[in-house]
Length: 256
Image 1 (cartoon, one colour):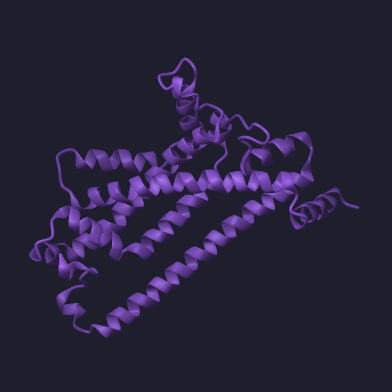
Image 2 (cartoon, rainbow, N blue to C red):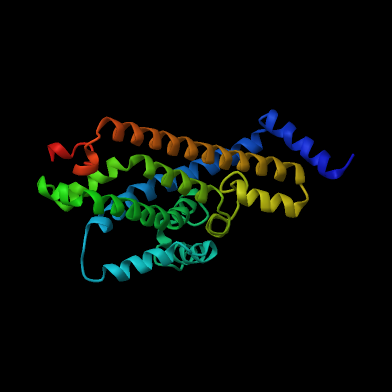
């Protein structure tokens, strides 16, 4: 039998049998990436909305730095966090190096610029349309930011799904700060690299198929959310034919 076909068949068997070693790696990957995305979304949504509705000296420089951080090399982020968390580093007393917590920190740093930048862009577009109305109702900038976050929740949900996809597919930073320790810090991407180098192609293929499955599910969810958002927006515009003259007011703004 062809080695690739044999490896592929074995990988299918490992997935079907829910092999414990495979499941442990998958669950750790989902847990680390999910936690990182929750942390990044909590900070990034607030920061992005604040940047969208605020005007202050140096804002343009902040936006340039933010957009530049979108292209942060994962290995550089991993190296910086490694130096910070190492025994001789300023945060070495925490003892977090080569732990899942260090991996969460690394992925949070990588995902945070994505969430912040895309949130800022989405909320600022809505602010340009609805800002005058919100100000006329007495809503301050912070209140306006919160209302626009809620109004654009469907678009922002796709941002968070995309951020999770970025996090779970990351390999460089988590390998540096996590150490790829079997049963402790080994996630799908680092396990694929290791098992391939060891020649254990069936396990590497099985993990690769699971990772592709996760990415496929994320893309399907993004497509569904976008479709749902477009249909909801179409119904809203159809129910309010006067919106073209009055502008689209975010939900809840009337009580601001």
